[in-house]
Image 1 (tube, rainbow, N blue to C red):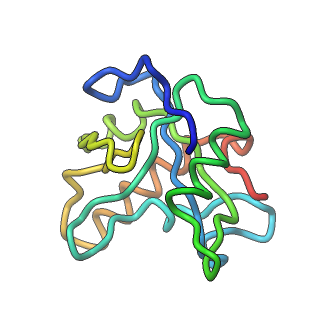
Image 2: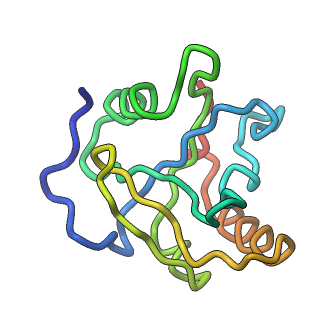
Length: 135
């Protein structure tokens, strides 16, 4: 079982990074960066699943994705590590549920597709290329 930081606060801190795991190749550009669409919410509940990666090593971050997100049919092929501040700056929030360990949802997305896409684009534009990681 992957390790989870023992120092996670009840709320996601502005200076904390969260990782959005990617299993769909259409969410990865030819240059190896992750597209903003990977951040868009699920239209059933308007939430985006992420994992809190505070104090985890690179290997532990990948292990978390493989254990809790990837499947044999859809393995984790990339991830986008996002500073929580970028999400809060869009008026969005987090719902940490730790189910599975370290899990949280990005919440308060607008239901209008053009608006939530705009939010996702603005967040993704602030993520440095080094934090958009393809295996």
